[in-house]
Image 1 (cartoon, one colour):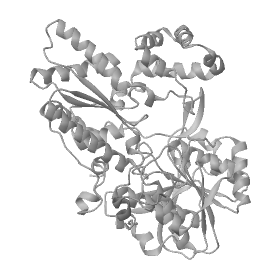
Image 2 (image 1 turned 180 degrees about the vertical axis):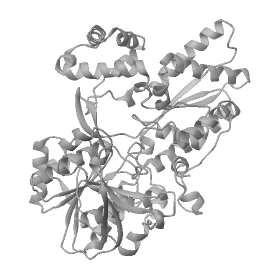
Image 3 (image 1 turned 90 degrees about the vertical axis):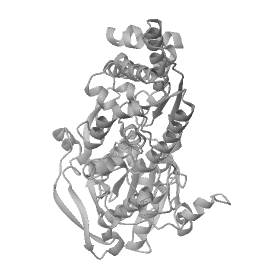
Image 4 (image 1 turned 120 degrees about the vertical axis):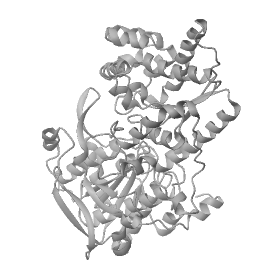
Length: 550
């Protein structure tokens, strides 16, 4: 920690996160009640055959106190990208373990999953935990994107944990990290290791959710921060009245962030990737729809506006998705040869191997976008969409179309676009009161799951639109969220991402209002996250969550 801290951080150190009533009253020494057996979200036969020891576990909820005995040494890692509230998950886990038994110990592995493999860790104490309560970031132990998916890695993890006497591991991560947690839990049982594995649902993208995981932590804080920035830009646009702002928002696989920010700020345009896929919209159709709104606003004397673009949009456009899937498979099967080629040769090689339709789609892209599509793949062999400047691609194509219309006398306005990408700004913000409470509860619940001897579970805290004393703590089997997906050209078991539901209340609310927002400048200015003040301002949940639970 630095020698000096900001006045806000100093004030936040004294904030006491709220807990579900059962944990607030009885601590983590609670009785685990189990329900009926569960099954995976799809591909049941295949998933069951892969997870014979952990498939079908029941959902767990906690009720009255239950006496616990024995000492526990637990480990924890932060895995994947950062999300506000990670430190409070660790604080909740630490406090929960100490409530079980003051002699219990918690170890943090450094740098994410690689710390487990390299056996680099620290032992947490009160002083260290207290320094990081209610703070943003993952810097208490760092994070990483090393994948735990191979048996030799699992063997190394078991050896290292046993050498330190650690019998429980908590993995704080998103869908990919918790997929690895699911695989590790299964392997630990298979090897009779005696090691428990528990996950906690993290991702600002909001795509790790279901009936039992109502929200992934960090989504609330990140969307509040992005919405503040969008509101500021809307105020500027409405003041200067001469710029169109195209804002790309994080969210590769789902448009939850774009939808939530739209519901909070009422922009003139917000594209929802899932709708694009459902309606099979082409890139040219999307461009035309944007251009029509720009033209109509210009006809009304409004040469300005705001457009929200989800990061992963390009993968939802049918002809682009087909092309990208072909590119991923092509590069995955010829990686060494492909990397040996010059840039020009890569373009020629790709065009010669793609199908006619995909080659045409690829060739229609500006060369800068073509090279962005060919950049190094992520650990799953997929294109890194955050590097693709989709917002620039769209306003370039919109600009081209408007110039055509101007030459034909159909467009008489001005179009001056600016681009923004809001991503890293939201990942390490000081958590909102909601995320501070929710994350602390998730960590405390993970301690209760460990104390109850559970493994292969994801920490679950539900009923989140109610006051925290009405939240419901428990756990759901990780296998319950699994399905098969194509990775590196092969079908692999992974946790299914939750996409925006077009028949859900959040999208329906957006759909009912977007035409009004397009032309009437009903801009909302959420302002900065409030940490102190009335509960109706400071403890407010996301609009998405409120609408889903109306």
